[in-house]
Image 1 (cartoon, helix red, strand yellow):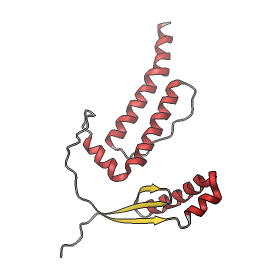
Image 2 (cartoon, rainbow, N blue to C red):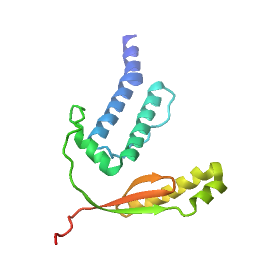
Image 3 (cartoon, rainbow, N blue to C red):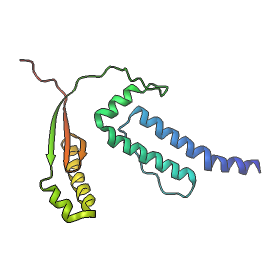
Image 4 (cartoon, one colour):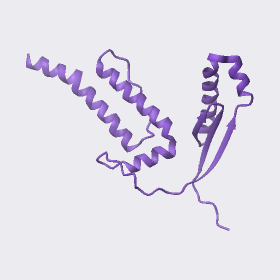
Length: 156
């Protein structure tokens, strides 16, 4: 009976918790790491794992490329945050786009306006990422994008 208890404890508790710990550890080492989708399950640990993955994805979106890099370097190996860590200068090209007549669209689409905005956001994000950029911010009809310049500009 102790064998059965140990097997169940390993399958139902230890392995899922170890997998979640690896997820958090991997995110602390590389905040922009692509997260693998957890397969659906009915156990509480499955729900917690999916919630951790969603939380990690939301943090990746919220912090963006530059923010994730800063946070990743500010987190020590022991998990403590050093808010006084020195930053670094980056050179980038910024793009700004706006959906024209957005107020008219929201009036016509009403509750379907989010589908419209999410479709546009998916197109903008894909185009920016395909060209080596990073979507930075979206506020309603406005999108901010950035393309990092890897070489410093020549000095005059």
